[in-house]
Length: 283
Length: 355
Image 1: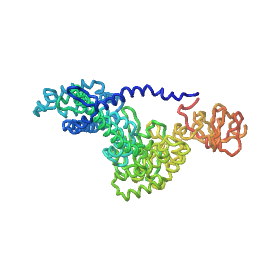
Image 2: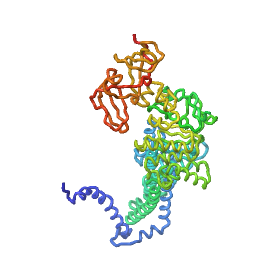
Image 3: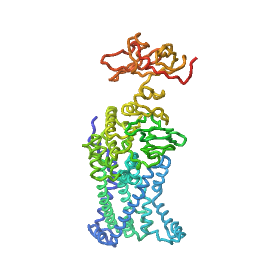
Image 4: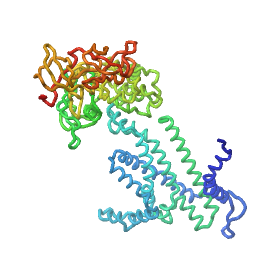
């Protein structure tokens, strides 16, 4: 059977066209846009400038927002790891009907629109919301929760948890349950067995889970937008404001590119560390 | 003196009895096998000794100490799991050293003991490999080394050879025995393979449906099985239903009209009996020269010996004959079967006397 040399190219073309049209072209256009001049009276110019990047990287207003974005994304990732890993472990030890029920509970948040969830949290955390009412009863006074970083982190953790639980759970599935028993039989306490035997083997799942959570949190839009209010901006809401409020598209594009690059650098560095570790330990 | 004892140990899962009234005492340095088909409770028994399953009732003592409710990590027993359960992210040496680390053994002593143990299981050159880089037999050796390096009072082996191919399994059987002899650790092995149990154990415990039915040395277990189940589970057995007649110093069993000389038995004449004989106790002669004539229905060459299915008036009889280097009776040929009367064993049938 003879095969046309063009066949492989033809076969990948639908995917390639999709990728080119929906990812690469808009990205290139955004990069070009970010170098164009902008004037509040005349709009986008047709000469090129580095002024937007210069302003973003020198203005403390922008730097503070970037710093907040990274900080909250990191905090969300850490909390997701601390909650998600034990959750996945418990899930993996559950018996047949309960396991699927609780897995559904964990994936549940993904089945509800992120906007609906954010409004749900704003009702809970508002000044007259359920949490403050409960705190009032306990005489701990009303606490300002809504439109704070706390509110953003709480809601982000809630949304991101499945992305942590599922990779860790998958890693646990591959684990021979007898391995932990073997560690006990050799004199390890439950904690020592978890730390020395189970953890290193699920670390791949944990690290890939944190990669997903960090990436999604750093570029989250709806939750910071709805629970952070107008003043507490994160990178994605900042980009939105530049585009839609200031109408300074080149500036918005420059911020978007910086966020993208920062995210990319952090995740690649992290992934490097993960892969090196994985290759050493698990092949 | 009994080193490890199980007294009236029971395990129920709801209404279901997994293990019932197990009484066993194992002497120091002894190699005992728990043999039985799957679901007979042998693994549950092992897990109760290991502390992985809590007995519903009964007592387990080790060297005079009651360990019935002790946690597995406090018992200090060495366990080799069916799947080996090696730590995949650790090297061979780290795997073996793990138990010593947990016991806070000093670094220098740890290294010597690990090296000695790896030498004992012939893995000295593999210390820095990861389990995934090893063959099945080598993984098995790592699992044994890891369990033995902590110098456990008792070594528990859960189907240790079932994941190996036939040739390697045979090799490892003898290897296992060699290692056990050289360290002298009391060992309990769970297996469903009767050949494995017979070849390396000092004593074999046969379990059926949660109960121990016979505890004996392998040779006696084979020659004098206590129940029909054991006689068919351990080795091959020809079983014939017939009527027993006394015949001077020996006996005779009447099976479908054929009169077969048998061992003497203390039974009334005319009792319904089951006569049993091992295939290798039967000899093949030319037709008419034996005690029972038949036709060779099929024969199988197994290398070391031949196996014949012979159709006789008393039913199909399996005969095993060593390979003497010349071709024996062919299929369809008429042969005579002979045996020493004492080797045809007689038991009273459950049915009672045939009138």
